[in-house]
Length: 241
Length: 276
Ligand SMILES: Nc1ncnc2c1ncn2[C@@H]1O[C@H](COP(=O)(O)OP(=O)(O)OP(=O)(O)O)[C@@H](O)[C@H]1O
Ligand SMILES: [Mg+2]
Image (cartoon, each protein chain N blue to C red):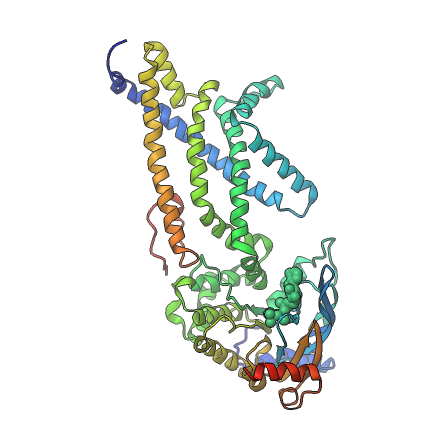
């Protein structure tokens, strides 16, 4: 085989960008499933009701102890065996969403702990219900504390979606694999895919470390009210009318 | 219940007048309240009557159980035994199997009683104004506009109108504590609890807060104040309660307690704090 690694890149790029778009969608769906699950599992593990606590612990331990790839194959091949037929994309979301929920539950648990009993008591003392105290006082502060770690997990799971090529989701790796098998230039195809993954992961990691630094500097001090920072954008002006 | 201004004595006296017909029932009555954590008996059978417009100071050495007693009043610490009555009615008697009273009664109790903590405990992720409006909207069901109007009234009284849009972290300690007082007052509580509200402040900033508390007391607010500020206890309160080792060892008018303490334990405590 002759020719530079990138000799076919221009030709492949449009299809790979389509694949990348699917990867991003998959990641978004995994986040939309995994993060709420992580919050629920964190609450479940801290629940005073024993059955809930044990159920949550089992999910967390299994989710963290079993490789996400094994869960993926279990869902994809296992569910049809019991006559549950769902699209491959959904299998990816279920398997990785579960894994993400298990991993991030630890992050949320630590963040809830960091917000602390004192804030909860202040909310109690003004008469907020438990749900309102959680919704308006604990959760927003915990999310802020947890954001850098959660973004770290999001980047890892974005990369892990490449495993979905084994279950024929038309994401980036699947596209690259198909291009490679047609041309037998696997090196070139996978190198382009790797470059595309990195073009998202590296800036995202950089953003995480910047956000971490900024949160460290701010400490417990002034906190912006807008949620824009959650998306990693500029910190807005701290005051608001 | 009608809205009442803090300095509005006549409106404030209406419920008290009704109560006096029923034998002058105190607003809050603690009967034999005890609290233990495991084997550790932190509060031992303390009884206390709090009448409308009365200011009670609780003093005593560190670890005496003052904070715990105060927190029993609004059930931040549910008492292990004994009862808390609000307007002559025992409240939060029924408990679930975790020892927690019903949500409805707890909310009723906490709507009637505001609390100010040593560490301010403002919500750091919300602006000063949002700290004041959130509980009004969620607990009292006020509209945002009503809540902001009431919030601004209180901020103006605290001399903090210009801080409405600030994050609490940008305010000085004294300002934060006054915001915390405002956060309790916007709820139009019948009773205010203060747990060493000036202990984490420099004397100068503490003075701002004490001034606010004095004017509240003069306006007729019913208050229970745990404090190490002996001047405040002596000058502002109607009744001083001395606690040691979880028990109330003496109580009376400030002149009695500071002028002629009856027990040796009180004398020892007072001479220690007065000599400082
Ligand atoms: N949640 C808790 N669990 C276990 N022990 C507690 C708890 N809260 C308070 N205590 C103990 O109860 C005792 C009294 O505490 P409390 O805070 O009521 O004292 P205090 O009179 O307010 O003291 P200080 O003047 O130092 O604030 C202390 O020995 C404390 O360690
Ligand atoms: Mg205390």
